[in-house]
Image (cartoon, helix red, strand yellow):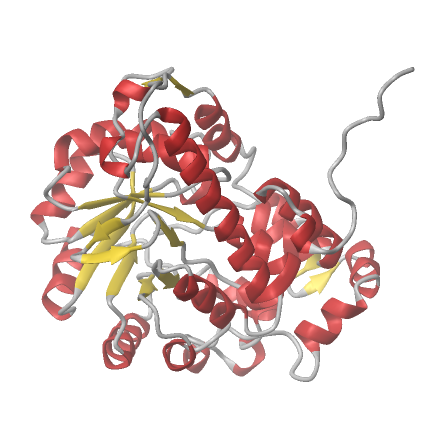
Length: 396
């Protein structure tokens, strides 16, 4: 008799998920396809999107055995403050299309787990409200836009609201070509008939997200958008044209003079650019290919990490994102020189599956996996990790 085919839990209770991947399946049960496509999709042929996962899978562990791993922990010091876990939540936009008050929910989940949360420029919640309702470590992402007054406005407001760090995303001078996301629409802000019918199949989502105020807005830049483009669905067509193509290192140097707290540049894949960031006075950098959503065929973040760590380790905090779905993935990055791993889609799956509690559940899954991996490698803390515990398909 053939054994039954393996399959994930097919219901909507996020607490039944055993992994981030299973949370993803539950998120699809609860959320219209077009919203999940925005979360999941990459640029063009999605080569970089796929490679982020493939390369992580191709890194293998060489564990030490017969080591006392009792009393192990995963605490990490980041910018002079201790975090309970080597994780941080990435800046992501349009989170309000997944659940009500999504950005506040993510910030609260991060606070409860003792890790930083970075709010996106294109969030659907004003940065002041997030600061009022969540009191953990808050960072603010910044895009450089053609309307430079937007940059100055966010800079001033983030400082006034007490944000710990500014995360300047530097790989988006030209907006990525996300073709699969575009295919959800027959015209700007007009879903295809198929997607409209799919929305009708998700009445709980409609009630949670659309009632009573309709489509969420890009709240942090709403004051600079024309009236007909304030909602997120209508504003996307305009926002893609607002990204400044002329940003240079002079913009980083200007931000360093203007911003009095921690400054992080996000989107670094080149060791030379990492060195330049340190020279410009940045406190940290995020090794990132934007989750495969910008330049397709770019190398994965994990491939870029060792070369960057060799140049700037100890001179600036090294963070990394793009493709991290397992605690084992996180440990691999830490062993290759990262100080912290930023997760985006993983917590968004949790958010879509169960709101704030679901996002927290995703973080709990990752933290448990990190702890278990440390023990199985023969390590008691993150400081004992290193490339000697890995076999990589690239030079580490």
